[in-house]
Length: 349
Image 1 (tube, one colour):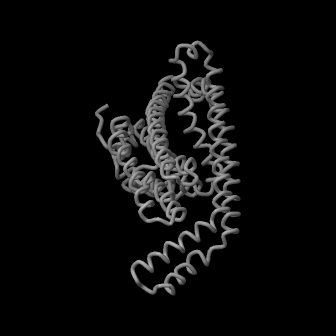
Image 2 (cartoon, rainbow, N blue to C red; image 1 turned 90 degrees about the horizontal axis):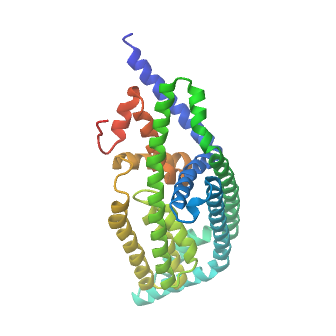
Image 3 (spheres, rainbow, N blue to C red; image 1 turned 180 degrees about the horizontal axis):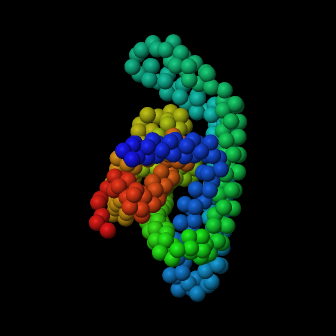
């Protein structure tokens, strides 16, 4: 049929639209599941790392996985507690921050000998004056309650996935029936496991180093909520190119409100950005390189698409999700051209 290519294109576009619709509609269900799957890669890598230790390596794998899952749940719980406490504390000190901002503006007005009180008052009225602080804090607490429920689901899903991981290969063999198809499917899954597992493990280690460095800087400058902002910086560093720098904006702005000093704020911002540059331009390329083999342009597009679909969780999951899609596309001759277009380097295998 002459119209077959056009028909295939139309059907493919319809399929993409339908999948996109269900990704948006099913966000509350899919995000915890996908996050749990990604988390399992980290926990499996941690389990393999424990096996290489002299004493722990002799313990049964099931016990090591249980220990890793407990640590994962504890870390997630601590994060939730820190977030909730920070929201509550910010609500308590918000009036002090607003007074500091007003004193800073008054000092600038006096220093530069300009009578801009009316302009400043209008600016405050448009920003802070239109803000119902109590309603904002209550809304934030409500959103964190929803996040807490999602975190609980992630831990539960991850636990069951860890428990059923060993039987997954047998399920594929029985489900596909054909031995060749089963082996190809297992090879594809093995490649996904290896690439995603290595990437997430190294990326997490880098984020911990970055978070620790930023925590030291924040504590040195006496910043409020230093632990919370260090965790936020480490988490947003999963977002390629823009995540870590975007995370620096929040503690810097809060530092201005806390100290009321431009010099103090600029110095803090310079130190945090320097840490980002050292980690992003020197440490990360040496530890990660181009493991995922994704074009930088594709990463940016994926970041935009997944952010539009799932918000910040989508931005964090953009790289591993896109890498999975590229590996799956490369496993089939009919869709291999898509994997080639997504790749940063062309591989002749």
